[in-house]
Image 1: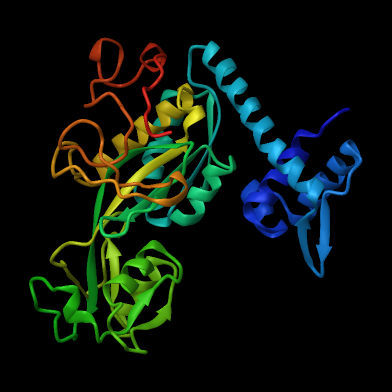
Image 2: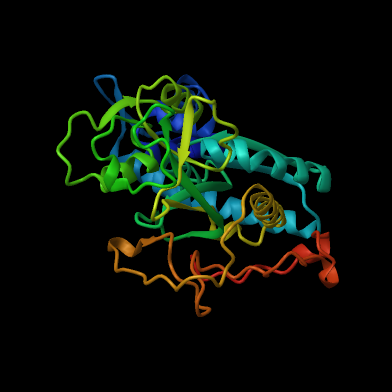
Length: 367
């Protein structure tokens, strides 16, 4: 029996994403291409794998069996690829990253530029996706690294089989129109803004925080305009159409009609790189995470590891845990992944990584 690898990828993605359209988006194909790959796989296994319920395609019982096996086979192939790549003793191959919009503006460009300069045999591809979607993409194998964020008050959940690295923290401010009654204040509290019309991205991590902040407020005006791009939110604030909670990362200059108000206590986003644990020894992945760390440290002043108390890990169902778990080292907060500290990470501590500095496997305890 000959089995189509693209077909296995297609049916595994359909199982994890839930629809042909979402599977196609995750794989970077058209829905018809995904459908064709699954049709070829049906011919390979001589089974009906897809059932049509109206316009919705769902897995048949045989399709569910094949999808579960496909995920295991694809994991084995990925492990083989990692081992073969590591035999070359250098950073090469292809790496796909998914990142939320402000990281795409503020952190990703210098990181990719550095990788292209240091490792010309490494080809990187970027997909812009919100943090929830990026986590799903890395979990199902559609991307190699997800750059995601959560809030100190609302940690995302890290699934079993994923590992991560805390890149740093990003503070958000409230933006108001210059004529707003709070515009001349040195700072504000979120409780003072419960009667405002907020500009927000529906379904985003930032929207989740706003909902949590004002959960006891009954105000139909609270969420006035669903606006995904922060640049568009800033333009609408400048027109006096609402207020917005906008992070400092990648924000750039604001127009004269907008005032930036620090919030006390400061809404803090924790930014992470997340990958599948079984790929953690891959040289290309290690080099990319290092480049992301360096880029973040240049873009913002991140909270140094060791500051602040360790975060307690609450019990969560199904073995899942929040991203803000405590490291085993006392006083550290962030993901439980051991990574060489400081910037002196080359051979003999000479700074920038050389091939020999990437050979040892990371010791991971987040998987």
